[in-house]
Image 1 (cartoon, rainbow, N blue to C red):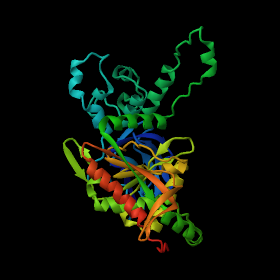
Image 2 (cartoon, rainbow, N blue to C red; image 1 turned 180 degrees about the vertical axis):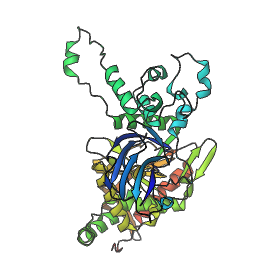
Image 3 (spheres, one colour; image 1 turned 180 degrees about the horizontal axis):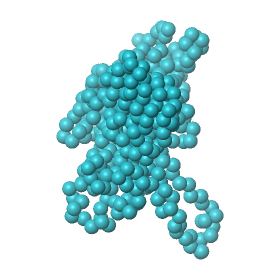
Length: 431
């Protein structure tokens, strides 16, 4: 038997540290590989961390509330002699092809101006995340502070209970619960307003969505193009194959994987839509990772990612779409499921919407929304002349960042997606 250390595993691109929320196991417990041993929080998601080893957890190296760097030791395990720590899945993999938008760097971008401001003028953007600083705050704490509109002076006054008196998630939440007890009085002359209104506090995810949407509109120069696509062939084809596909695979075939497949094909034709912006540089992504917006039961929205979407056939895409949507609605997504997206789609037609103008998911430069498929009278061009018929039509909207995507590229990409949908093979076999 020998002792090995478990390291904090990667939590997704741009995540360099996390906060320990709960230790799920005790020292002395027998652990099986993949058992969840920690619950941690990053500025993107709360998630559980599985053990890479089977053995006995002999010692914890972290406490609840600690801010832990990715790749740092968190626990010691007694394992069989044949287990090689160097080959453990817990070893951090930091070879990232292109970094995602760094929220902490964004918060720090005006730090050089902080020394010239009074405490009242200091904003969260001035706070350091340097581990050697006396005023270190984790990305999670900074994220919550921004969502709650705390200024730097308020944050500095919070008594920290973490390592080296650092402010933890629980510290800031405790402060916020007290901070919110002072309510503004409603004028006596307007009792009807008090009786007719209800104040609902945003939950943490809604605050995060709000912050990121505003941030995206500030960063990207949004432009939206539209096209109406004839989906008649696809509607008839899906109707013909859906029952047989469910019997053979156990999965349903919705329109979403068909739409994603068309987007992936168009990205291969126009790779400059699969980019991000870093300062004055354009980062061209080799991987095609498609984010798909999923509405949650509580009304919030989350965007899990299909990594390497170009490597799936249609049946594989259908299975992946169903799996991610199910896990999203059951709150079982992992940090990696939300990281690394290079292009995003939103099927707003599921809510009966004809069209929309979606907001870009940073640091991506474009997003596509598919509206409801509606039967309409349409002109059909034939070799014998134009005819009037009933067709299944769908509006597609494409929002893109005009800093780096001009109207020609944004429009041609949208048209190419439509062409792939309208040119769908009516005799295609799925399995």
